[in-house]
Amino acid sequence: MLRKAMIIVVALLCLGGGLWALQRKSAVASKDAPVAARLLVQDGKPQAPQHQNLVEPSAAVMKKDAPDRMAAAPPAPEAKLALKASRAPSGLSASGDASYPLIVGSTVGIGAVGTKGRGGGTGSYGEGIGVLGGRASLGSALHGAGSGGGGVGMGAGMAMGKMSSKKVVVLREIAVSGPAEASSSGEGYKNYGINPFTETKKDKLSTFSVDVDTASYTLARRKLVEGMMPPKDSVRVEEFLNYFHYDYPQPSGHPLAVSLDAAPSPFTSGRHLLRVGVQGKRLSISERKPAHLTFLVDVSGSMQSPDRLPLAKRALRMLVDQLRDGDTVALVTYAGGVKLALPPTGLEKKAEIHAAIEELTAGGSTAMASGIDLAYQQAMKTLDGKSTSRVLILSDGDANVGRTSHEEILKQIRGYVKEGVTLSTFGFGMGNYQDTMMEQLADRGNGNYYYVDSLMAARRIFQEQIGGTLEVIAQDVKLQVEFDPAQVQRYRLVGYENRDIADEDFRNDKVDAGEIGAGHTVTALYELELSPGAKGDGLCTVRIRAKKPRGEKADEAAYPFRGEALASRFDDASADFRFAAAVMGAAEIFRQSPHAEKWSYEQVVRIAKGASPQGSAERQEFIALLERAREIVGQVARR
Image (cartoon, rainbow, N blue to C red; front, side, top):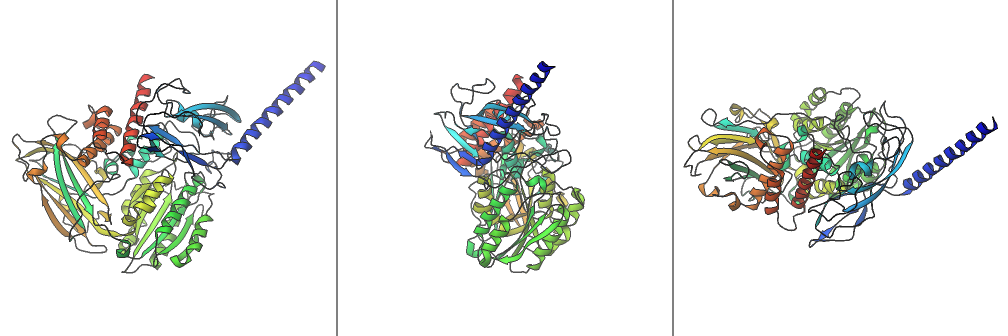
């Protein structure tokens, strides 16, 4: 009996010590401000890492407010995910894969409660080593490797290891709140199909609406950085193409200009690629109309993690700082209910606007539809013919209270659009992200759709490119390409599947189409099969129709293809043309297009490298992502 009592006492002492150690390590982790290390490259040489706060130190990392999630997880440092552009020498890796020893991170994972679909165990604790960019780094760096698995897996890889001497590329500072998931079962994407080839003799016209959204590319970037291939239904080729800058000629005398060029395809022998580029007129700050903005911010429980509401707040503060006298800002929030946090307020009270943004906190369910109603009511108050009125939704798109279906929510915005209030969406977060909802809201709201995966992405959208969001220069913009049956046997528009317009509706001004903002560009690529002896002159004619903002009747212009715009070899085409071909090729491979079955990452990487000048950060990042995708696919093949 005494022996049994002694055993129990010893067991209790051991358990108590273990719990104390767990609490101590958790407390130490919670004291650290969320900081990400940014690895820089200058003149091909790695520079010292810089550190930058991505979210305020007070922002706690909490679990989603849902029935199958129980307790809040403790705060944790954020992870900086860096990716190299060329293979590095051998080194340490958590999985034994020594290919990418760029940064070694020591991680702490606490599996407070095993969440649905992720496994885990109660109270599991573990440490692991993660090599960012290596096979197991993203899993190890974000999961606790204890007896119960990751649970909600709070933890981050901190930069503390060796840096490769070879060239590396900064991807983004990603605010990470939980484990990278192997699937996207909780997310919402829609398959719009893939355009087939069309015989020109049967149908010589191809008609579609323009699209300047970029969210699909940014979503894919985040997935790849976290060690996963993007879901194929999330890949929209046009949004990959339109993410990048191309040097199209500026319009002269008109708000829009169209450029055309073509060259043999680098992917399929016997085919050509045709590029259609549209450039919107740039406007100076003084030329911009006053902007009346209504921020509609999701503050539900699902927005608590650092990559959601805290990042959205930073983005909004950036945007406010870009506004000028005469602009106004209103702020509406929604969770289980809706709240008018700030009525329309002029920029002379900028401090009040910043304070209202700073006070936003997350918690509760998600009544998106009610929030949209209130936001539009505020936007209508400032609507006049001399300014721009726009609603900006910042959310993960996950509605679960009130009207929750796509169609129910989309129906309610139709009347407001006719009144002249446009709507743009800005997506945040992962795991429960509803891409279809956010994309369709922007589409029906005559606005733009972006996904914000990092502070650097926020700067690009809310600072560098904000002019296009604030000022629409052309609305209901349609393109129609008429091919010459004598020169083109078959054609295929790559992407724009959900932007298709019936040929007979091209001149029907009652049919809705996309908008183009100041400085925006639109790029579309066609695959062509030319007839023997095709010379290029008159290969096709591109017509563009567009209305002035709030106009009723569209203007039309035609652009015939010139023979000198047809390159005899792919390598003779411009660098922009070749890079666009690489982007299209990558997107086709990502979405597993049947037309790209024989295309390879090696081809795409080679083309992209040859079309990327030194100093082009966004193109070097794209190449790094392709290398990452190739590595992920190789890992799957080796299993």
